Length: 177
Image (cartoon, rainbow, N blue to C red; front, side, top):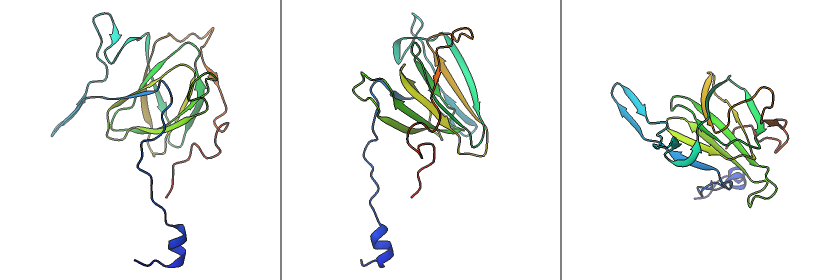
């Protein structure tokens, strides 16, 4: 089929290849059961020893919840001694950014963008040293629950921040066709 010149020069094929992945980052599909009256998701199952069943060596020390206001970007931050699991209920949707700032990592300076929630029930594992953040493109508050293997300390917080715009200039903007 012949296209008009203006469309011909702008047309492209969208890539459906798997997106890049940072070393150590894992995404787990959780069981979600839907019925006429609602839905049910198993968020965490534990081993008899207290580990997280999908990663038994991870021992939950604290469970936190945060709210992300409409249009907000909460980024970047990272930890030296803490790993985390993130969970966003399927009824919400949050845009997540990950940036591997570990100098010795095989994926150093690589990045990932992904969505949590949005009808899916997934758990995201973020290892220490991977900078992370989130953005809320919706018009409602978003709830994110995160499970950490170190307790928060006000006196000595294991959290460092990097300005939200320190990476790619438009990283925290949704892609547009």
